[in-house]
Length: 121
Image (cartoon, rainbow, N blue to C red):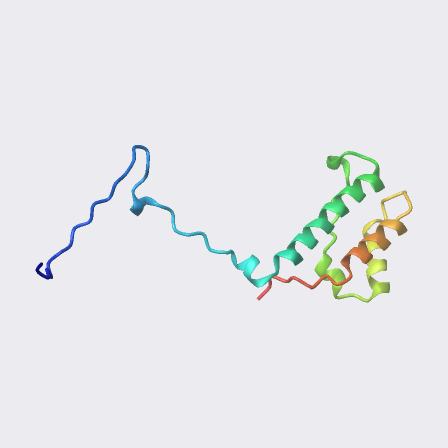
């Protein structure tokens, strides 16, 4: 056998309907958001947001499109003391005729241990 230093040829077998290797999409990388923040933290935040949505339906006793536009910013609340959090939530829910204390207590309880997630640089 002789050692060849010339170009080596490869044979690729391809079944019908299979794309060529050059056309494959690049490997998916984890997004910056999931790298920077723990998936468990993101899931907890999502669960809280879904809970808020369900509770707002109960508080305002109406369909989703009839709920007043409320912006409950969890990161902003995390910067405040407990009393300031309660005052902020009371202010946001001033148009709600039903008792708000159970909602506020439930939200603040669920936010315990939540870390601030700011995307600002």
